[in-house]
Image (cartoon, rainbow, N blue to C red; front, side):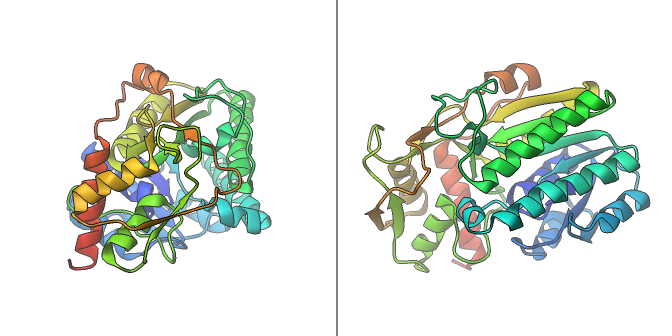
Length: 334
């Protein structure tokens, strides 16, 4: 059984490929490497101990995507490919809609054309917007205040409509929260190009001395310590969730949505403290104003995934921070 992993060279995609191999699946990676290093391919091969096919291709190129399906027998697609920076999406909305929505339509058209009708889609907690109360449940109304979140809502709708129109289709939509951590080998982790947008990569660079301090966006939220509270999940737990979701998708038709998170919230200050403990480094920070559109608290209700998928988040915040530090330390020879 062969799985096409779009965006498989990225942070979550690469860890999912490792878990696919451990579960006995063959996989193919398609990635344009716009926000990842092609060296990751060699790292994945080293961890799993075997080679696999890799296509440096862009999902906006229909003929390129279609060609991958024609050259291979693909049973399912795990679809990670997409632009993902919230702030950048506000500045470049057309780029985000073209890439995320039009690119996904190309993938779905190629799947349809080649009789592959099983997909696991990488959605996001951003689809819950500003007005829902925590914990977020899958049945809540969706809204988004930025093009990135809107693109995820659009794709969820496309998948739902596709499954209604063609009863042979199966689409498992995974809304995940804040993945952090790294593979325990220290060989694979999150190391984005340029100045990082996410909290842990930013803290990594402060710990290494590459950046002078961490910007904390607001300490006046209605939370226990005033800083934003988020649901952090170890990337390996998240990757294992994709395997469970894919197994479910092979047995069930139609569209189904699951939250993947830890089910509890952790504040920015708590993350900083856990990271300091894991790394032995003092993390300097500066409190600045809130970011537009940020909510005070965001965490998942994960009961559906636990019950239906038999999936459970295993690792705690300290493990996530230890693995992140182990990875970045190895990358920089510390």
